[in-house]
Image (cartoon, rainbow, N blue to C red; front, top):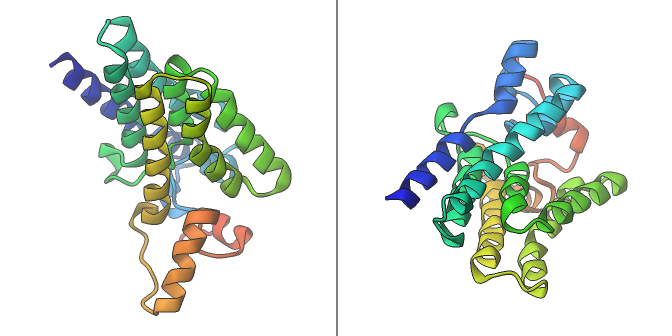
Length: 218
């Protein structure tokens, strides 16, 4: 029962849409209608205020770190702590409070890793930093997450931690392809292109500028 309670707590905390709240409070906008449509720090950076990405990012990290840490602190065991952290990531990606349309989960992954696998945090942070420098953040982030289970295994982490890293890789792929329920083209070839763009580039179009700076049609 304690583990079930921890998972529920993790999901509800993860569902708190900090980026959405920042958009509403600071600009009065709904981030789901701008840019990529994800409720994420990236949307806050480009459509709300650049400085706001710091508190939003810290909150997103904390809401996954806390249930994972709490599971360890209460002596529920590593598997329970892993489930609590992953539940927060699921809540972030599919938040209860926003019709299950959320972010991509990287910040919550890093938060869950802090108490479970501390070296995983700089691993993902470095992947995003390298991607930022090379102008391929989405690709670098995907590679970083997909290689995370291997990194965990090579550094001798416990089985539940490596399993958590595998789950993070799976959640990333599913969330990118699902894309908050965005519609797919009817034509088969176009649909395949969109699938590939979503997986590799985390967007439906080849142009980052066109995708990131979309605004609601009036």
